[in-house]
Image (tube, rainbow, N blue to C red; front, side):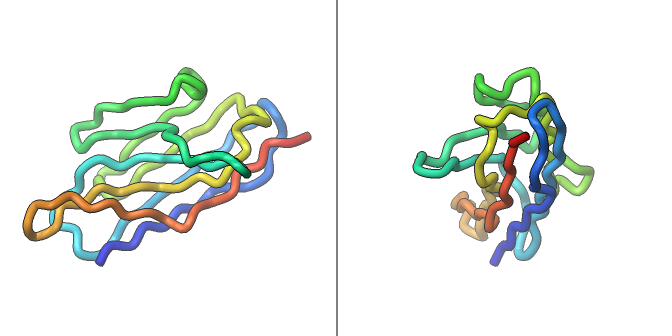
Length: 120
C-alpha cells in the first residue's frame, strides 16, 4: 500500500504565497509522475501541475508564472510554491502519486486534500 499526505494549506490574502508539501510512503519501489490537482466547490477536479521522475514539469495555463512544482531529493516528496495567489485559486488541493506495482502496472494514489483559501 501507498500513503500520500499533503500539508501546507491555509488562509492567505490575495497576492500572498503558500507552499504545499506532499509525501508518499509505503510499498514504493519506483516512483513515476507526481502532481497537484485542485477542486473548487461545485467544480470538477483539475490539473494544477505535474512533474515527471526526470524533473519535467507541466502547468495549467491559469497558474503558469505564479506556481512552481518541485521534487525533493527522495523523489517521493513534491512541493508546490504558490505566489501571487488569487481568489480563484481557492480550492482543495490534492496530491497525486503514480506508482508502478510489482507487475509494472501504474496505479494512482491520492492524498486527502488540503484547503487553500484566498480571501481578504
